[in-house]
Image 1: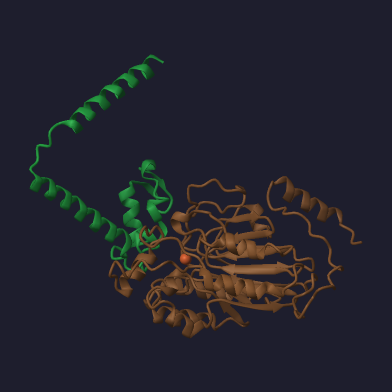
Image 2: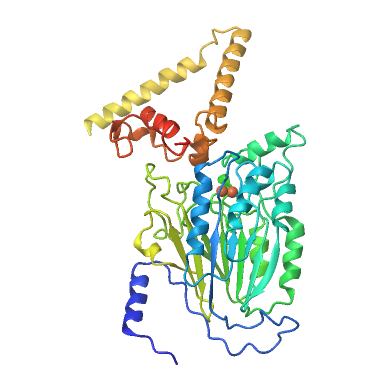
Length: 338
Length: 107
Ligand SMILES: [Fe+2]
Ligand SMILES: [Fe+2]
């Protein structure tokens, strides 16, 4: 039995008193040696503790020395300076702004400066000029899974919309232009689509329910603000496929802001961009104290940042928003409990 | 209380007058109504383009990048003291600042 020090206890009480991040305890491991099937790596409840980093939403332009290039480079440098280094880096989409080959190429050359391996999923800004052709050339599959130190990681392409361009006779450039607008009324709601749903069901079929799972998508797996595609239309199906797991940590880009929600066994958190922050849409948030403050327009780094997620042996996750400036309230700055 | 009641009466009266106007015979010919509609829609199209195409700034960013649906512009709060302007400014001043030295410029 591990003892909790007074200081730790006080720390916990403060967190709880702030009415925020306490998401419940998780039963200790030990019982999970049955029914492991063929899944050797991930099929244990124990995590060998580690940290991974996340970057997202660089929105690079095809313009030399654009200020967003420097912000992405700053995120990369920040992660390279972490001590100890994170095991790997995840990138949650929107590397480019207009899906141009040159933007994605520039993004890859900056990300290649990371000292560790990185894995990427696409955002809508990467995709709709050539329907992901250039992106796949640089970054490979748009959905994937891997196991690391006892955790099963899943990444999916959540920005697939039904064809709105063929009937309207739009050129690829016009299609991309529409998708670049957050409030695009003609583009419709996006999701992962039936193929990826089938793939996901298959992927987790033999992964035992006590396996810690981390899911990365560009958009949130819940209906936050559908008007800005702060949603994934087939999130209910995804959540039901993942329901068998004791605990899932879901992380998403696209919203360019601090946002947290918990849906059953899923803890969900949004990320800061390295381009520009978005204001909160006019909705009541389920956890209203987990927000960033209003951005100072005179400080272009305000609202931007990189991220680190530390996972403990019992799969408690702490998400640290490593902001470039100073817009986080103290309760968020201390780290978001996932 | 008295004032509120008075305002209410004025409001109702104004609504009635406006409703009356709306129901009056359209003084325009069909062609004139078309002209008016086309003029309005051209202005809407132009405004939508300026808002989204990034041609107002110098680094590709459009107003719409950071302000979807015009959010976080708070038009009703201007004029006010604005730190980045260093003085009391109008919304127009703030827009120009965004385009010329803010996030939408290459400075
Ligand atoms: Fe984005
Ligand atoms: Fe996005």
